[in-house]
Length: 211
Image (cartoon, rainbow, N blue to C red; front, side, top):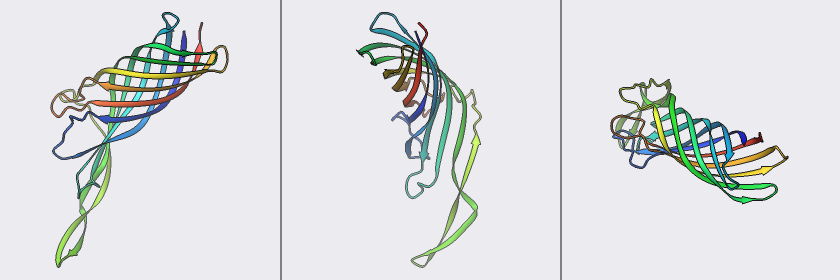
């Protein structure tokens, strides 16, 4: 059995079915990731992996032209419990490569919203073809979102696919690189439009062999 501590980078995008009357563009955004995992070999080439992970899932909504400077960025933090079954595809004295798939369940811990809005109290005028046009300067804002149980779904569940490469540096210590894709099957909202996370995770860590 192995115990692994790892950290890395997340790249989150919303499901393509997402629509908004106000924001027309959805952009994927990167953030951070920390996990503690355990790996147990059922037989020589089949293993199970489980643990807990803190995942930051961000996305950015932007207005269409000519208002692209107006945007809203959501930073949502989850505590998740993943479980997967893996197949040991390559095994040498130093290197092991594993591919696997599984499921995950998570709890939506917190949410922060950052963005920009037109400032009605900070304007300036320009003249275009003899016409006076009033313009607004853009102001930034940041607020901690209140998760309303009448609107938000704080439990998230989905499927995952992953690939892991381990390099042994001693009989009990190994370096690990992991790439995974998590696709939520539940929406963050109880009403339309659905907000469904699709998250890529790249991480590195160290593994300790217990026995």
